[in-house]
Image: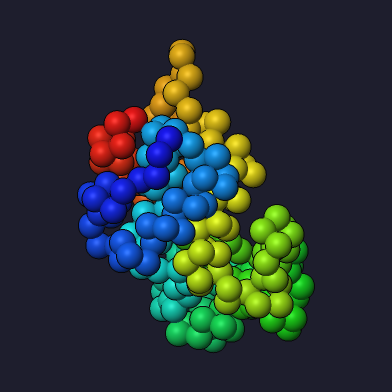
Length: 211
């Protein structure tokens, strides 16, 4: 597959900064074998949704108390507990990501240091360390590097390939492409949040790329 063009990317993500993202995305797709129209369409569709068309690389953790009780009911069983963390992204990240994904306890600061960053929101010390090793980039000491377009695109490519998502994106006789796209969503998201939006991007990307 040849590089995607500025015109093609602009038709898929009309609100993206094409000059900023075209080269990093093409480089990452070459590096991580996103090398067919089917793979590229699924990859770009998922990234477009995850990042708000390549505009948001940093997880938004600015929640109201009411929303915290809805999103993390086990962590915030009452409004009184939630109000201690509402509107405080750093404090919230240290609580909700403590003791998970290779992070230390709440006091360690790992939750905030390794909160979601990049085009696919890489989260947790263990994931940062695995990505850092694969890309030969110091992410555990400098996690903010995931906000750089080149590193953000490469980290998304690494995650995509390492989870077998290229193969899921391939068209396989006798299998449902829609079902496979849902599986991809679940692997990236942990569920199917935003699936209709992801599928709209996918439909456009397939048409644009001839998948």
